[in-house]
Amino acid sequence: MARLHTRRSIALIGAALASVTLLAQTPAYAAGSQPNPGSALDRIDQRDLPLNKSYSWTAAGVNVRVYLLSSGVSVTHTDFGGRAIQGADLVGGPITDGCTTTGTGVAGLVAGNKYGVAKEAQVISVRAFPCSGRPTAAQAVAGINWVTQHAVKPAVAVLPDALTADPGIDAAVAQSIQVGITWVVGAGNEGTDFGGDACKLSPARVVDAITATHLEQHPMGIGKENLAAGANRGQCVDLAAPTGTTAIGGDSHENPWSVGGGNVGVTAGAVAKLVGQSPNSSPYVIQQQLKDAATTGRLSPDTVGTPNRILFTH
Image (tube, rainbow, N blue to C red; front, side, top):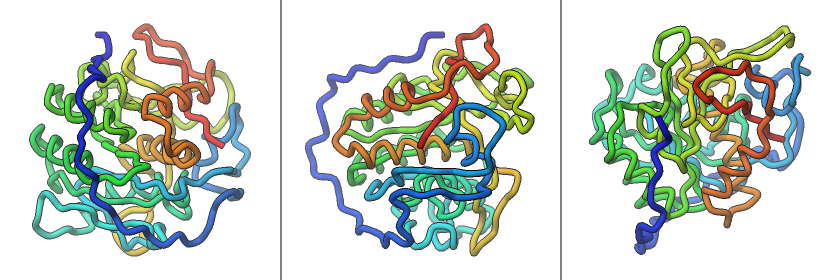
């Protein structure tokens, strides 16, 4: 199935976007190197294997706000160093550690001090989904629209979940991109060994969203790399990214086995770095820069047109 294209000629939203107080930027990571990082960080700053047990960077997403749609983020987790806040709660009710495991883990991979790609980016939690069960299209659209109406640019938005195909979700994301917010979304996981077609899901099929699938860890460094079991693929995927150890729950808890959507968080961190370096660039330019920078030729080819790109950032 061809990737869903959207018209870029929809009128821009004219109302001024609401401001968000800048968060403390501690510690400073304008450039640096981290020894013995998590496996995701170790993979994305080098072209080839084996891993060199280091993550280096020359940009860290300073002044970029990353809006994360999830069932909740533990914004007080020590990995965020005070750079995470609650932006909106569209669900209500108590938020327990069980609610925040996935959201906190993804956020940690975006911008955590220890686990994150963009170590100076700010995380704004948009609690749009229930703690259990799949979110409805209406809940997803409400969260997307909140970001569109309230995000302060330069901004990146993240939806780790791939949802049942819905034109309303696609249109909401497309409009958000048209007002200058770069969206990073998940390709999803079909639950079978080979995975399914990301073009059959929303908003993975939106052409101007950056759609990330899950790269399997390959510690031996021999031969081609593969997508993780069940990871969706196809022409709607922009690139593959790894996941790994990250923050979860509250306090200082971590999960050594990664979380669902972690590869989307890693990709969003790389996007935040690009946006921080070029805050006036459109989402279309950022998407192309990310694809142009990707490592090519390392993935095992498939017959469904998945691009042979692995996330690369430095």
